[in-house]
Length: 559
Image (cartoon, rainbow, N blue to C red; front, side):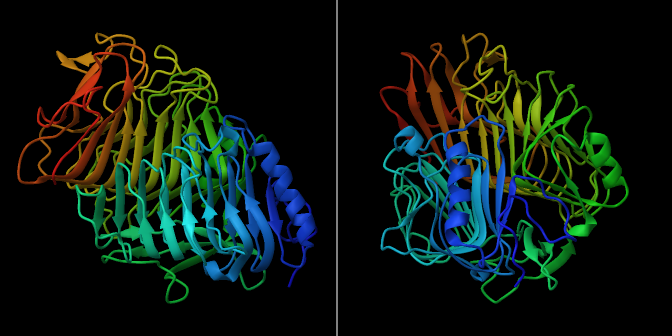
């Protein structure tokens, strides 16, 4: 087996330069030396919520005796064809010690394509909230999704846990195509799609929404080592038929392996939008190594089948009021593993996928997986909207779209943003949609035959007056709006939460949709978390359902 020097970013001589923040490990390296590297990064990243550090750990196949503690903007990634090709004997975990067990701000980190063999009977902890992922992981023990305090996650997919999963204080959670011995825990909104052995208690006795099979999905691409020991990207095929459980139970899943030499390996501080667009125009895929990329124009993806893969939550910032990325209305594009951060100059949107034109992409849809958007928080920023999804048949898988409620620029008149997500395409399916704090409709759905499996939304904390947050004589804006005239739409497991801190504002409806047999909305919970006297969400949907306020904090639909 090839032995790499224990240097951040070390690669074989023929491999591309992945930069100093990609740490590649081999099992022949001294465990103590690897552990020292991991500990040093964690000390830097543990509380660096809005810092610029970005890191990816890549583990070549084999067994390691390690404690992998994940801080902000850090990914632990196995390089095997299957999760069990990389065994971490010890733990891969995330806690909220930096907030004394409160994990509600434990964002932007992930683990994927590896197995964890605990060396003690205690469960591993993955105490996280939004903007995190636990993908293609095999845990040979138990998992706790909390850390003794509040937590507000989260996303688990294509993973197997041999023991129990305990959600603890998690306010909400989406599990998709997962397997475990037992699930325990419930709070507000727990959704299970294509899961083996989901909890059996029915809604509304427990806040469980169970969808027996995943209608269609294409798993996120992942790094592997090829037969020469060099890095490549595995691109899974579309699972067009309904599925249940992990994709890798029968061995290597269907798909293609793309050599890394077919990627433009981008480096923050070195690459610009121009150099990236030149490479994409020449037919390259794009690997965004960890870092913050400042852009003076949009990255443009025009070739069918292009893969854009980010490592270490690589972050794009449009500095001049442009979009950060524009994707043409073509087949089979993959966008995954990165964040877009609004710049100081207002952008019309941060990311646009497709153009209105109604091309059919059902046989080869575009995928967005682990894509996050942020307006304010790290820096002052603004955008009219975050994601415009105009292509048909798009699949979304773990999207967090956040107008910051804390951090730099988190003020009503500073980090301005009307909408989080606007969907114009038909037959768009999203698993795990988190949209928060925008100043008008959080999500506005205009296309037909849309499907959402799990939705989490907090209304804006900071509306200064009711007049500032009202339209057409209606108090507030619905958290989830299906446009008038849409005839067919389906959504399962929606949680809308109110924190009304700055003024005695009310929101008339948590959801607004057309009425009709083609509109199917199942399992909605509305919660008043806290607020000033007189604040409330008045109805659940379309003027129906009770108010939530200081007197009645929670309300839900029967179906």
